[in-house]
Every structure is written in C-alpha cells, then in structure tokens.
Length: 249
Length: 261
Image (tube, rainbow over all chains, first blue to last red):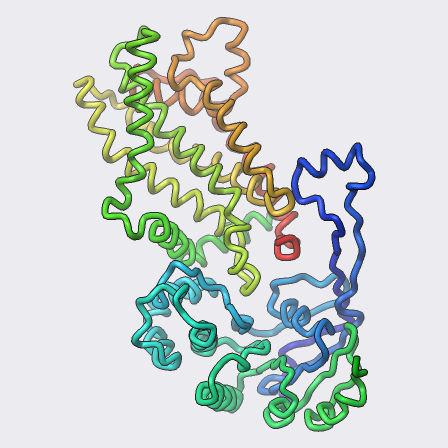
C-alpha cells in the first residue's frame, strides 16, 4: 500500500456557540450589571472521534447530510481550524479548499487575484508567472481576466478558484461541493482534470452530495453522520447505503 | 523564542504575499482616482496649513520656522495613527482569505503597517525638501533619522499585533482606538515643543511612547541637536514592550481567529 498521506486519529472538534453574543466591549460591560444580557455559551461538537486514513494517490469521497461535519473535517485537514482533541497528520502540501466563493478580493481583477491567491501558498513571483497562463487557459476566462471579480458570475468565480487550485501542484486537493455551480462542460473538464491529477499520484478528498459522482469517481468513501464516521469502505457500497443510514427528515 | 523565529521565517518565505497585499491596498484605495497616491498627501498638507494658521498666527506659538516644526512631527504621527486605525481591520478585513488558506497570519498586520509606511515614505519625499527651504544647514544627525524610523515601524507593528487580535473578539475596539488616538495626539509634543510643557505635566508626556519618538525627530531635524540618551532608551524599551506584548497575544489568539470571524 502506498504511504499514508492523511492520517486522522480520534479527532474531536468543538465550537463555542455564543447565544446573545457580546461582541463589543460595550455589551460586555453592560452584561456585568445586567445578567439577562450575559452571553450564554454552548459547546457544540462538530466532530466526535473521527478516524480517517488516506493513502497517496487515492480519491476519497466524504458524504453525509448537512451539518454532519464534512466541511469542518476538510478545514482541519487544510490547517485552517485546529483540532480540539485528537491528531491530524498531513504528509504533504495541501491545495486550497475549493469551495463556492473562494478567497478573492472583489475589487481586484482576475489577474491580480491569481497573483494574490497563489502567493497565499508562499509561491514566489516567478513561480506564479510560470503557472499564470495555464490558470487562465483552464479557467477559460481570457476575455474577463482584467475585469474586477466583483463583476464575475458565481460560475466564473468557481472556474477561477478551481483553475488556481489545480495549477498549484500541491500533493493534496480538497474539493468541497463545488462542481454544482459550473456548467456541464466545465464540470466534465474538472472531473477529467481530477482524474488526471489522480493518475499523477495526487491525493484528492472530495466532499459532495452528488452520490453518483462519488461512487463513480472515488475509490473509497466515508459517510459522516453527526460528527461520527457512520460507514466507510468502497465508494459504491457506501453511497449505496446512504439512504438507509441517513434518516429522512 | 522558537515561535518568534517561525514567525520571522514565515514573513520572509511569504514576502510575495506581503507585496501583493500592499499592492492590493494601494489599488483598492487609490484605483479610479487620477491623483492616486497624491491624495495621501492631502491630509498632512491640510493639517500643516491649518495648524500653522491657528497656532502660529492666532495663538502665536513662539517657535520660528513653525511649519517645519509641524512637518517634523505630523508626518511620523500620521503614519502611526493611520497604521493603528487600519490595523484593527487587518484580520477581520481579510476574513475571506484566512478562512480558506493556511498561511502565516503575521503577514496581515505586517502588510497593513507596510502599506502605511510606504505612504509615509512618499510623504517624506515630498515634504523633505522643506528642510532645505526653511534652513540651509543640515547636520550629520540626519543619519539617525532612518534608524529611528525603523524603530517606530517595529513599535507600531507591536501595537498592530495587539489591536488586530483583539478586534476579532470585540468589534468596537476600533472606535475606542479613534478616541485614544485623539487624546494621544494632544498629549504628544507635535504642535508644541516639549520644553513648553509645565513641570507637572511633563511626567504625563514622558510616559507617552509617541512623545519619545516625536521629540527625537524634532531634535534631529528641527533643533539639530543630539537627542537625550534617556529618550533613546525609552524608545527602545517601548518598542520591546509593544512587540513583546503585542506578538505574544497575537500568537496566543491566532488559533481562534477563524472561529471568531
């Protein structure tokens, strides 16, 4: 078996939900005198002891109902959030979390955003110069590249984000429910690209509600329910059991 | 100490990011205006003209070459106050970036300070000839100017670390900062000289870190004399304190930034 590139062991993540949140010093001060205005805190466990192992070159799907902890898990693997308990070992570089509405600055043009975004990964100017043309070509946004991205459509946003992420040449690609916004043709292009990256030994974690995509593309899949791994195994089997495991509300 | 090293290495490794963030600020702030960066001169220019009018001609402050005296203090003050106000936005204003990617977050306050520092350098470029206009002799003391400026950069960076990391929790810190800056401005010898301050008040001014920096600039440029050694020591101590407290708090809090945004 190829080397393990992502190893998640007994991962717990809690968030503090602040009811009646005191988010200014003024409110904080008032709450000292007025108990009713005091902030109430509640701990919410988004992940409860998740174990996950991904080998290099695998494409692993993560499925589950809304709020089951899929995105939190990806964010922790990406190093954006920190585990409350448990350990996460990532042996390699992680490409951006590809989500709808990636971190672009609306006032900057597509070109400027490519440079800003790529430099977030510590790329130097020369390295960005080298990938720039490929990014633009893949995104198919040649005609709009010097337009501020605030004028882009959601689909164009996503195209640019995806194009940057795949050209960064990182070891691990995290894809969070993104293909839903692209049109048919671009979706096919992305899927083909993901296949190609996988053949080149890249590892892909793919969060999606599109069960047919997961079963078709992924080698294995994890089903998360309420922050726990409810099932793991061959992608087709896991997606096949989805409807049995997930109660219909 | 190792965390300080990793922070520093991060800054170097991600210099292209710092550059792009500064470029972004410049573009976003000045795009679409023909005069561009020139606008950043309008504020100090207006201050110098109006304060000269008010304090030289109306209140008759007995300082010769008064506009030069003002320039010496106002330009570094504007850097400080601009940087401090902007730094409260350094983290929350870049929420969309740090929610997506892992990168050394120190870059954000650093880039904010750098952006303001570039405006300062630009202002210096334009106003510096005033020194020659008002007086012909420039002493070799002027060589001290850049090192002191560097120290002020670090001092301001410490304040920025502090403010940017508490604003994620308390959003109204920005308003408090504005009030505090106004108070600090009048407690700093910018429009008056430190020697005009009566004995009892001297102490109040001496505990103000900005007063140390500004009097040193005035000594070097306006008076052409060597600053007092204790003022130097006080500048260095304030810088260490500001960076020490500011950066420790920043490091401690940065793990929760994403959750608080």
